[in-house]
Image (cartoon, rainbow over all chains, first blue to last red; front, top):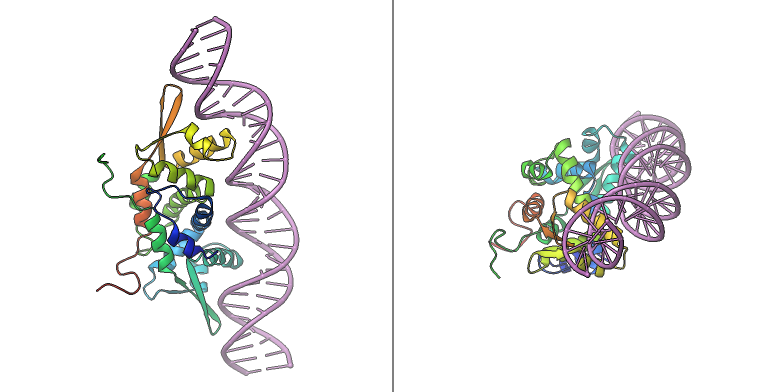
Length: 118
Length: 118
DNA sequence: AACCTATTTCGATGAACATCTATACGGAGG
DNA sequence: CCTCCGTATAGATGTTCATCGAAATAGGTT
């Protein structure tokens, strides 16, 4: 059920085939990354020095309506890539590095790409 | 235009925000990964010992029509994750490790994950 | 050339999605 | 308490997408 658990249990794509359940979970996360706006939002949050970004800062970075940004943030939060915290009137979003790390590991190549070996 | 070039030019998400063009290119690849069937197909090809998989083998692994599998293979090929080669009556698909590696690098975390080490 | 099999393309359909406007919620300040 | 500001939710709309069945293409065989 927990997406992060599914990611942790899923072997790298190059090691063995995913079963249907693993694939369904992993696909949800990749689908969340499959939108240009969400990718940019994620990179804004992930690369921010303090680690936190206010929704208003994100909204300013796009020519999209505020509800649209809020929708994308919700999607990223639902798949475990972001968390949010309210302080006073503002909501701050943070990266969940574990999820990103698991995704990266999932796509990792075995060792040497070119040679044959065996 | 070339997706692999865009991936190569895109910094890790944790380093700096993606611009609109980079995000659009990267999103196309992640969108291709955002389907459970395609993820399983990719993992079947990527984890296969010889590196090659015949379409008929992939079709056997799913309860989907053969045209549907062909459609998914085309999507994976269009974003540069797979290549294909025809030999005799059969078409064999191979992983493009460079693309997968670039994606993995894109999601890489800066240095120390959360706790352990040093 | 006619044929068989494997694969791709075409056309259609129903579901999912990105986006918008309008509205609701939640805290801060008068 | 009422209002303002920032954010989230609801409802609506046009587009994209996964999937199927049917038809077209391509390579090898007889």
